[in-house]
Amino acid sequence: MERPSAQRRQAERRRLWDRRAPFPRRASNDRRTGERRSAALDRPTERRAGQDRRGAERRAEASRRAQANRRKGRRRRETPTPYTAQEMTQLRERFAAEGPVRCPACDGRFTLGPSRRRGADSSRRVVCIGCGRAAVVTSSRAARILLIDQHDGIRDALNTVLSGAGHEVIEANDAAVGLVAYQVVPADVVILDVIGPGRMPAPEFMRRLRALFPEAKVITMAGRSSHRGVDPLAVTQGLGAARTVRMPVASEELLRIVDEVRR
Image (cartoon, rainbow, N blue to C red; front, side, top):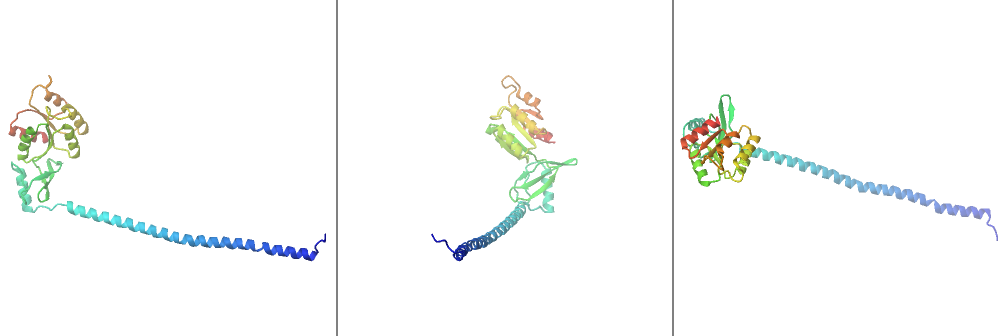
């Protein structure tokens, strides 16, 4: 077999080299092309991310402005129209006098805010149900009273007496409901019928109320001197009742007891 000459072997090596040389160049070209393509693909992603971020910031700013505007509108709606100087004079005179108190502007009834001490006097914020006007009345004789009784007839009779004297009366036909109502809006005085407290017994109501609100003022009422062999008024008095009343009771006596207890 004839061996190839040196020239043929060199030509063969050159031909093989020429075949191999383009591959690394193509690989590097493909790599650079891939990098350019990935960079081109990343640029829209970055732009979209920036646009999304700016859009989120704009939406958050718009939400903050909307909330601020709603708060301003709520404050404007919740800020009542004040009374004139003449109406304030009439309002103070009406709260100082006996009988129900009516608004000097629209002759409507009032809702009473919690009583606060200012030195030797007590004051509360009163808001008219009709026109929405409000004022702070010093030494107001009106009180917020929570009336708890299971019997509708007794509640109606007591509500008539207390509302006629200008007090705000909140009714509850169950002691458990009355306890929740007191937690939501504390009352100046609680009147509890120990014979008809509803599902929750009167002693249990007294214990829970005194545990949550040690300064709560409770007037307990009962029409019997003995219930299950025990005086119910004596039990509630031992649990912290401010006054005990034996029913029936005169209207003047009830109003006098309420005024004494709330001070």
